Length: 71
Image (cartoon, rainbow, N blue to C red; front, side, top):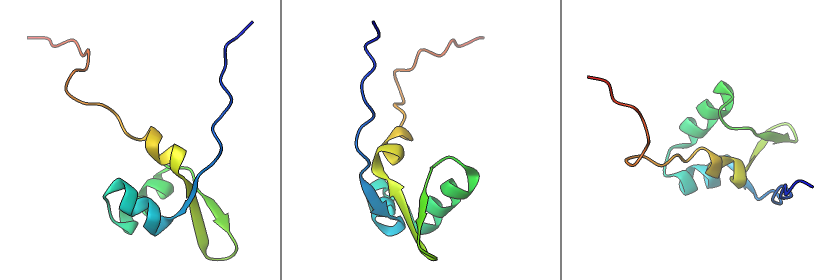
């Protein structure tokens, strides 16, 4: 038996809302989408929506990583 957890419900936000949440510009959000780093959905001819769960996945802790340092 596997203990997979169900995917969280999407939390949709506009490009501007996602940018404010991440503390970056709208242009940066659009760049991440274009590069494929941030999945997005087009709703109608102009509106783009981002699942905030996907935006949160971009956050990576720094500082206490387990990288091996070579001299």
